[in-house]
Length: 351
Image (tube, one colour):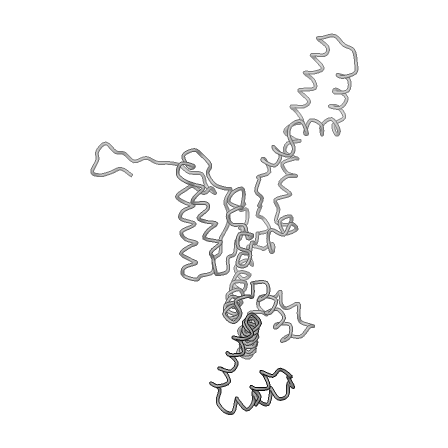
């Protein structure tokens, strides 16, 4: 905008392409991700970008740094993150790289609409790299009878310079006539690799969605993930050594134990899992399981410390016995007598 205090300035309008991250928009995206994480909110990204702007001015504007900020924000994210490619949207190039679920697989999931497209290279770029003009010419020679005949005659028959020049011109004209159709077919074939079906087959997305039911799908999915994350936080507090995969396996095992092996398929139903996690009786059962895990972790920790220094462990046991009330001391004494340990030091403790 123009500076009202300086008459020499004037308004300058700069046009920017759509579906492209520029330095300012990339910074705003990264800032929004960090703000959502700070407020502990789940995040849904409607991904419809073709990449980052790579002009010299944008490189000077530190586009790479702000793109890295997006990755940093997703790496540090502690809540569920859902990346959704909407209908007729596309995710390409560097934009795919910065929102790929492999950045933070414990919290990120990617979904695509049935009419969306995705891939690092666009079909035109794939054809340019993988199916160059010489490859198209070889395909013409193999498929088109007229082109093959012209090419064969041009190479075998003896002819004058004028006749050869005429045959070469006919060959080039046929090639120019066929090139648009062959290029269009090759581009269409390359685009088939960017369909949601191929993305699902390669494992880069979780599921193919329909826009009409996407709202309902994400409602139950987000609700389920929030409840699961709450349980995982409690499990992590009980035993810090547990990772995301182990905690999810525990939840699945508890769900199957509650529903029975016949209904284990309901684990893939978000509504059923939400109902299970929201049931007060099941919440009490989950809390009891978490307490048992906390108890086992504490016992394991004490066992590890005792194994590392036996003398100190013995002194610690004696100190704990002295601090116990008489009733618990009697229970420990009975337990030690039942073990029938033949160690002189332990026998002194038993007496």
